[in-house]
Image 1 (spheres, rainbow, N blue to C red):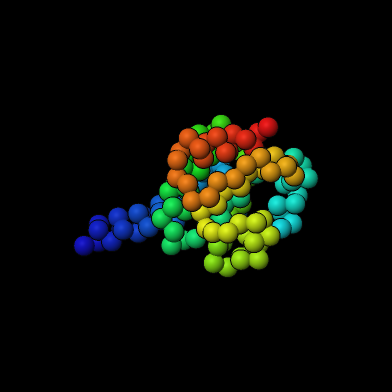
Image 2: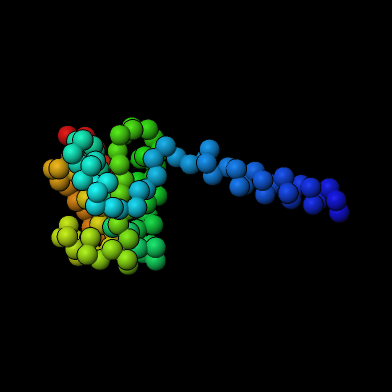
Length: 132
């Protein structure tokens, strides 16, 4: 029984330690207006993700965006997540009407948006537009 307990403790320690090293280079940043404005001011490529935890389309979009980010093709991309349920005033300020909306920016210029779409190529094109 003792070897099992020791193994369980070792496994728990590994799981607790893993997230810091296992996270991707870029994770979603919870939307804060000041951080968004700062990213725009420095001309960063930006993707806004209006996301609801309960939305299957949002989940599909998130998997596609994560794969794009993890590819390393857009190392400067900043992905801000707007919580659809808790940040209604924020998403409305961007003219969004429903969850599962992705909006791309290059600095202060909006370069495109899609709503309720899971097409991986369209999402990849949207992310690519942040570079121009």
